[in-house]
Amino acid sequence: MTLSADNRINVSSEVGKLRKVLIHSPDSGLGKVVPSKAQDWLFEDIVHLNTIRANEYDYYVKLLLYFLDETKIKGRLTQIDAPAHYRNFYKPDHPDFYHSQQVVELQVLLMDILEDRAIKNQLVASVCAIEACSYEVQRRLMEYSPAVLARVFFSGTSDESELIFPPIPNFIFTRDIGIVINDHILLNKPRKEARKREALIAKYIFFHHPLFAHYRDNIIELTDTQHHFLLPNDSETEKVTLEGGDVMVVSKNHVLIGISERTNSEAAAQAVKKLFEKNVVDKITVIKIPNKRDYMHIDTVFTQVKDEVWVMLGVFSNKHMKGLQTDEVHRVLGVQPRTAQELQIFQFRKEDPATTRFFASLEDLLIDISVVDFGCDPEHVRILLSGNNQFPYDAREQWTDSCNLLALGNGVVLGYDRNDKTIEAFRETGFSVMDVTELLVQLEEGSIRANELKDTLVLMPSAELSRARGGFHCMSMPLLRD
Image (tube, rainbow, N blue to C red):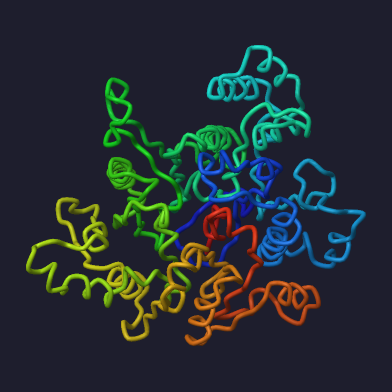
């Protein structure tokens, strides 16, 4: 079977050149998060929608287009930003929408599948069951056009006068709905009730949209344990929950799976078993991090920058872990400090799953990946630390996603402009640091080409986006990488 570049998906790296990515631009649901429901909807604070849209996320879309689909944006910046065309370029149901096959908008995919009356019937019935709607509401939704219905499913409203459903503001974090591992798709099972509609919509898209038609047999779903419905509601051990922020495809044969606040041990065990059974990868490393809101997913505590460079929270460094382990009081009492106790790293191989390799620290694992999977000299592996490992900036900047970077290519990454000390660490390591506004001007003028950038941290505006508790790694689901 031969696939064209437009319908091929394959991800076997965290840092290979990004060719196709699934995103969702902030919709009006973000502007409907109220303080009393913010934490239920997984937000720490309410955010200002217009700022996120017009002064922050729009830079992300523009930059992605310059790197992945330049013909859609080159020569159009002035027109796009003109008051007469305000935001039309970013509205999936507007004629001026950018419609890229490389920077793929999730809402467009939903609109596409809703053109099929049978799928529309099924999805409306399923969403209404989840949201406990009246039959009258269900009938009314069936009369909406695909564009309006898609907007309702995302934001909860067809206009500003009536809120039919709660919004699902976390859909901007597209990585969590599924992960492409080589030519397979691992679907999520969210931990929180607020994300169940996301999982349902994502499942319909992956199984029904033509973009994924060649991969339907390669979709992996996790299931709840047998007879889980007979167990008490608080029986956490029997639930299966997994989110994409806890899965990293570091090489063609090696996947990392986190056990965290959002992904549990049963889900990790199932994922390991299924990925091995389907011969998707040969090696899987499971990383259990402390179950804390601060960390949430493994990609909030580390991400890869290039083959031999990583960014990580310093509490998981060798120096910190060894300091914990040699504490005299803990040694005498036989008590392991909390961080050391809750960090566990196990590596399994398909040819011999019973043989497990253990790592004492996250830093040891990342160095091992660079050396074993990428052939790097161990002397050249560099681990940059959040906040440049200075208290209290390390914890403050990790909270605002200093460790959650998206690589557009090997060594070219996007991060928030507010993490000053982490930026300082990049500069000290020899990276160039560029503001996105400056970079866009140079890309538009042609004084620099996207593929010419090397070892560069691109700073993105973040006053409001960072309050949503996710960085650009979270806001991307790579579909195709070199």
